[in-house]
Image (cartoon, rainbow, N blue to C red; front, top):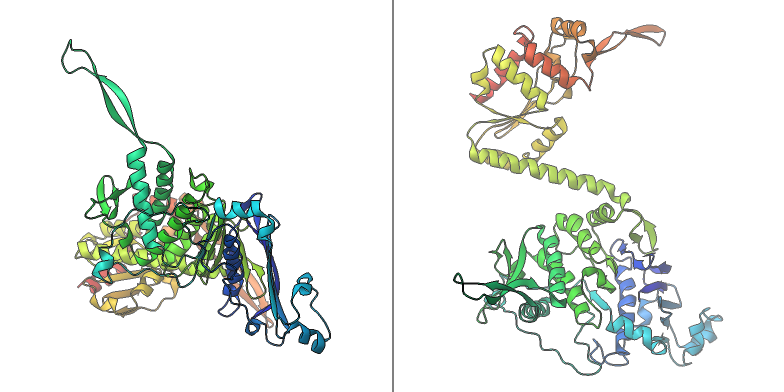
Length: 601
């Protein structure tokens, strides 16, 4: 059973919205709520959480609040400014409905002073001297109510969820898992809808899971062994793995863990001895993470979120053999809290997709998370609503953030590559725009006897002048003052860059040969004789724009013919010149070697 729709009228910044929760057949689509601070995102969630908390009271006695009470505070103070009442309704697909009507004065005074009544059926049930009414039909639908709270998970992760970091104090660092003590009595769920600090409960549950799997689900097979020739065979049991529901749940936990740790290798959980009951992560049978809950704050947040979903469903009456079996409603306020950009964009969407039958209702301030959802789900398989009007928006509206993120990753990658090179080598690093530049420089060095100069630097392919710019920006700070070796960024002549220096980082431009036929790229260094020779022997290498004439303000202006290398033939031209080129062809490269020698020395 899932939430079908919600209607909110005149509550805080929310004027009037009705949201139909998206479905894909029988499967719910993730619903993501965005908006600036103060636009009603948490107000929207509060009505949904309130409906779950109230419904649980019909089935269990160990609810978060006292029997007959509600979770969400009801007050005239939440009525929108200038309005006389507020209304909200939450409906489930089973027909269950929760309604709330709040007046700014008693019903009697409302009718007497305002000369109208709200067009709501619930109006007639407000007592004359009261200012509000709350109605729920959970009691009228005992079957569906038991289904959602006994056979599904219902969880709310508020924005104030928090776990102390492992380094904060010795007690927390040494906190150990213990076996769960569950009360097996009627109308007691052993579960909580509101999850603010589930780490200890998840630890204990994992220990139970490891124990059950190791004790009750170990499988053996019998083999016959004869110790001496002629002796009768002896049947011995041999370990054959694990099988059972605990094993299935254990595998589901590993599936989540591999996504969070971004490692699909041979990973398993380990448990310490009774005197040190830590839960560790083993990789290839070696201890990889000594304490599962000593991961980074963001990783522990993710672990708690999604382990809590598995644990809660395991404690229900539902059958759990894989993550696909888990059904329910999970509400998460500010899901991106404490998470690195890579977790927001890459890990979170993957985790959400791992629970296809869970109705995720999420608020976020992270455009990167939205772009990650777009990449993982596609635009049609999840929904984004912008508050306070609940207007549907697309993740592509935030595409500029995706571009910024990719640029950030690319810059970080370049910086890491450079750091490694600087640590392992003493030579300056010379970045050029592309692989063809490297090949031309090496051939020119060979023909012009400049190889000793070129050997003084490490040639690197920068992947275009745009990437050279990213490298420059990543060092346009105090880091450039402390790197030990020189870093040279060599741009082609047509980039119009200004030569400059920042610490040991240099920006240099190949000198343009204005009289040469090709005006752009490193091919500008080849003279007329070389280009004419190529036109005669390999005409497909060189494209020509013929002369053209224009009349501008009464005068005829003739644009001369221009030549340029065909973009699809650049590689073939490079191959030919590196194989057949002469010293005369590469004479103009001498200026590049002079520049390198000046910088190196």
